[in-house]
Image (cartoon, rainbow, N blue to C red):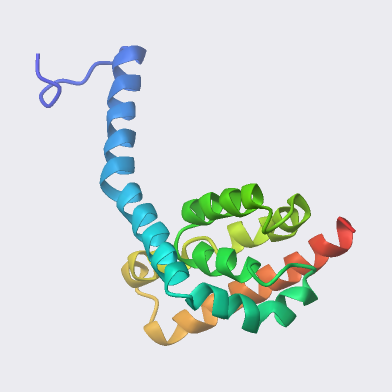
Length: 156
């Protein structure tokens, strides 16, 4: 009996088929994007770009009660939230950011979630004209900024 020709209604078989599809999706689609975002962030860090951004954007991050290096996490979130979570964990472990900072940024992880990655995949496929894409991204950035201000006020 081939999996292609007949489908079983056995819950175990259904679960195994779903698990195989999920595994293939994770390995084939998600992992390459996460690794790409993490490697790109690491390269920019080694080149000093992230340190430069941390210093330049420090005053802006202070508005949200965050240190300058928080900009690295927010920019990475636009590429891949999974990579941003990994970078966040590394920064917390290194003492670069605090649990308070993570709490303030938490809404931004969801509101900025991998927009660069999904811009073409979702907006392009949905037929949204490209001229609206920057506006949609700006709306998410404004929402994330408002959410971080509110979170900073709540957790003070």
